[in-house]
Length: 404
Image (cartoon, rainbow, N blue to C red):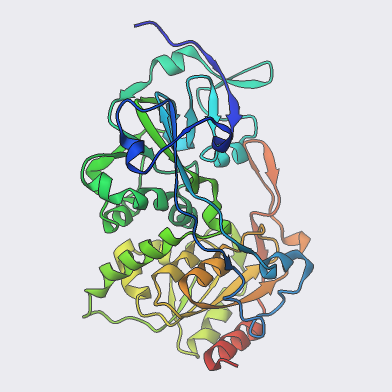
């Protein structure tokens, strides 16, 4: 067999591709067109600020954080692009069509890390453009069964894992369970496999790839969820996922479950560090809160311990994904450092789930920033230290508790 030619890479928006419209089953049909597109029915538009209790919140009128209360009555289409015979580097979320097209939105994290893709292992640079060399493509393992790309290049963050990656798999859980479709992924952790299992997706239906391994797929499906759409406009599939996961925990009735939960960040060694977190935890303990470090718990334990939580307090971060495991109508206070990127995903997830939400904004002084370099690019607003206004958190808790 001859070696495939090297491919000069170019970014392509799937909506700009001339793809044949199909229904869901058409994505799996043998002998289909080179590109096919299934667009899910549009969800109703909603006001994504509806969950926010502004009277209970503190600091949300600050210039840096004003985006959280901007009206956003909107819904976005969700789609699945089927591609015949592409190459894929699953751990980076990189999908390369036969003409060198790099398929958005799955490549978004790779592009954030390395805008010219030069940091992707195995790729070369030629005349300022990333190229997939012939020997890289020639060594690709051939996958003949249909596959769905499970994740982009940041599956380790549980917030992105839940919001971006799991919805595509959950949409096709029945087909995966029936052996009609497999998932394509990098190496997964035991927790990632555990939550997939809870969504009725068996590990036996996952093709795992090493970090820089390239595969060639006879039929690969790429979900638009991998482009962070759920971070801005959470879709109805998250409601379905939350219901399934809560049902899994509902059967464990013999276990004590806290009604008030503080999600701590003691398991975070570097990142967004709350310097007075222990003092906050002591103050919340007096109001009946139990402190949980979710990163140290199995998925099963997380589902159990959050199942009856009527009140959740925590700092912005992946741990706050746990609001999806709480009963509808729960109250949520998010501690929001004003240096976080404009991602109102917790407040909007609360709107979708029917929770009540308040934000306590914490200013971050410039001298407390801890700049880091990611693939040679300095990122100033990822790691920092801050102190939360503890009385403001307690006021938010009290106001949400009384409804006034």
